[in-house]
Every structure is written in C-alpha cells, then in structure tokens.
Image 1 (cartoon, each protein chain N blue to C red):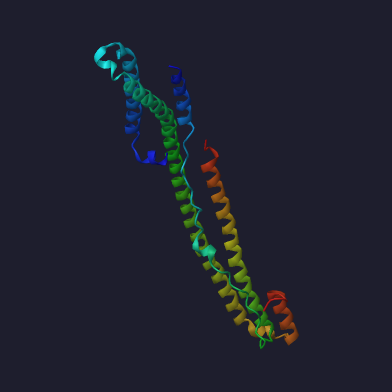
Image 2 (spheres, rainbow over the protein chains, first blue to last red):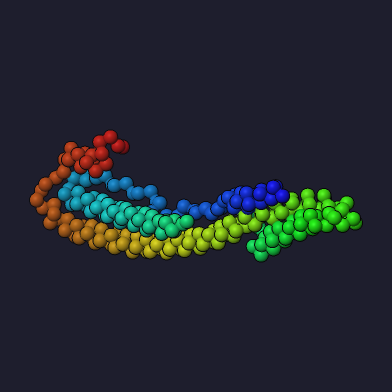
Length: 93
Length: 149
C-alpha cells in the first residue's frame, strides 16, 4: 500500500512533460521593396550646357524621390510587422 | 508526447480514465478476493497488473490535463498567427499600391520637368555659361562618390 504514494508523484510528472510545437514564419516583404536601387546617372562628358546639367539633375532627383518613397515604405512595413508580431506574442502565456 | 497530438482529445480522455479505473478495480479486487479460494491463485498477478495500470492511469491523467490545455493554447496561437499573416499581407498590398501610384507620379513629374527644360533650352543656355570638363567631373564625383566607379 506504501507504493500507492507513487501515484500522485507520477500524476505530477505527467503534468510536466509537454512542449508547444508552434512556429511563426518570418513575414514576406513586398516585391518592390526588394528590388535593387537604381544608380544615379552621371553627366555625359559631352554635355557642356547648363540645360544638360538641369536635365541630369532632374532625372536624378526623380530617382532619389522614388528611393525615398521605397525607404519610407520599408519603415512602414517594419513598424507594422513589428506591431503585429508584438500583438501576437505579448499575451502568450 | 508529440504522438499524442495525433490522437483526438475524447479518445485520450476515455483511455486515461479507463486505464485508471481498470487499475483501481484490479488492485482492490486482488486485495479483497485474496481470501476466496478460487481467486487466491490470481491474487498476486491481479494486484501487480492493477498497480501498474493505476500508476499508468495516474501518469496519463496528469499529462492529459496539460495536454488538453496546451492543445487549446496551440490552437489559439495558430489563430493569432493566421490573423497576423493576413494583416501583414493586407499591409503589403497597400504598400505595393502606394509605391506603384506614387512612383508613377514621380516619373510623370520628372518627365514634365525635363520636357520644360527641353522647351526652355535656348533660354537657359542664352547666358553663354558652358560647362568645362572639370565641372562635369566634379559634378559626377559629388554624385557618385570619389572612391566609386
């Protein structure tokens, strides 16, 4: 009958032997944000007019603005996914 | 324990209780029936098997409570992850739309400005200021960087 004392012990051991097999995939970033950035265009050696310089600057400013837009969207993507990740895992017991 | 994930909860509950009940019945039956001549010869095996089943039943019942609680939490976590993935996907769609729309605007702006420069070319260059090769080189260096091709 003394061996019956083992029963609550085994009951408690059974309680302590379980793992939670849940994994979370890393979120996928939008395709346009993963593209290689365009290089700025240098001024051609034969461009000797001020208008050529203006043309070139305008095209390069345009490229900068496109890159700025993508950079801002990268930040937005990161902040949103970080917030979502925190919301998902914060209340985990 | 991961194999338990494959078995339905109701089956597990039934098996754990059944093992415990059979163990208790066998164990105490062995104790009670040991004085009856016919059952005397089965007394020891009954008590040994009953005791083993009793231990197994206690172990399974202990683990089962945790197993069921974990199943509930796993499901809850999976639901949350699914919601998160959906929201993340929706955000990606919005980001792509914004990039596509605003890139078009930027390209349109650039095209309009370069068109205007082209139209005003003579007026702009009227001052007679020509760019020397040194100026072009300096300008390109400022843009691309000195250490970069």
